[in-house]
Length: 356
Image 1 (cartoon, rainbow, N blue to C red):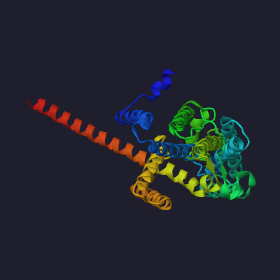
Image 2: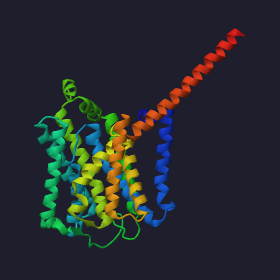
Image 3: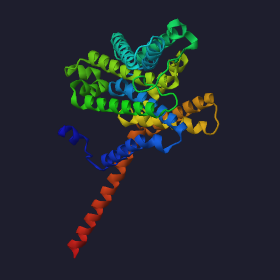
Image 4: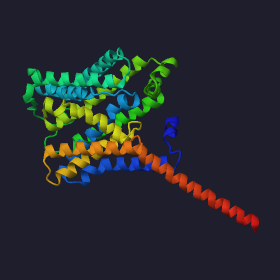
């Protein structure tokens, strides 16, 4: 425990500033529902969902380098698992979430193993996983069990933690999403720092052939990363289903959602833990800001995509790896400049002392 805490201590000015920002962000997230209008609590919940699905995509995409568009299938499976099992057949909602995670995780492992037969080309991986997402969406749109094009509505009654349902007060579900995001981040940090599997992922991302020469089972670890990532992506899908009390293929299985996960993680900084979360919260804030100007829902979606495109172009133009890496580089340059000025001032004082 001591070694883990020592690894989290700030090791420089940039780390110290980022640590303060994280602590402040967590504190604000916990008090947020009590300092905003009740309607804004829902906005905070959506921001957490966006952050969570970006972050869970990043486990496969950012850590293992798998350019996946299959995660929308995991997101949709999580939502439909709750709708079919809990709403339609009376299963406990928590059991339904676990089943959705298991199904999504198994799908992720199978897809990764199948795609590995075609090599690790990012283009073919993205194309194959996009085809999978379209197939799952088509099944949901035509299958009576999933409500076809009409979707499924939650007609259950009863509230509370065991039912994961609060019809009039969004605060409890907000805190469930917040705790889920924190646990997922902590699990990921532990995995990448304390397990051989987690430490192998950056090597696989950078150079699979070199990783294989080091004795790393690339195909197995990629499949495990994909399975874990998609299983965790089912969680925000389940939570959004409980929040809206409605699920359809159009609401949780469009390819646009998968693209937004991928682009959101990249914009924030797929090489960082905070990047996908920052991007998710930022996009939710942008959408709410547009709605405050009475922009229609369809226009909000279009403008959001334009903003995504503009930010991606700006990041490419600056040669950066995302918003958070840009912020870190800015801090490094700032403190390097200050150190340089301090050293020059010290040298000047020493020269004056010598002449005196």
